[in-house]
Amino acid sequence: MSQSPAAPLAPAVPLPTVPLLQLGTWVVFYGLLAMIVIFFVSADQGAISIPAGNAVHEWVHDARHLLGYPCH
Image (cartoon, rainbow, N blue to C red):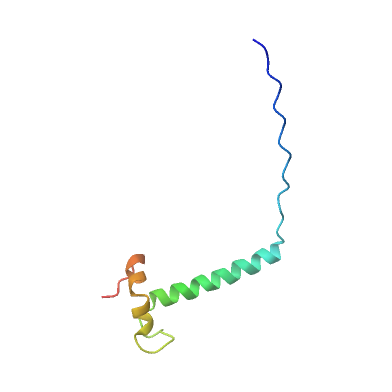
């Protein structure tokens, strides 16, 4: 058997570095955004509801059921 020539190695791709402070800022931003979304989806329009009335509950009614929140 004859040996085939070795395949050329692919050039190394440098990995980008992200400063920790910049990453932390985005983590905090998206964490707060997620908490606000979860609050409005899970809000039962009760004692801790920010807007008055039943509008938010009706807007996210199907999302509540999809995520398993009881509502009626």
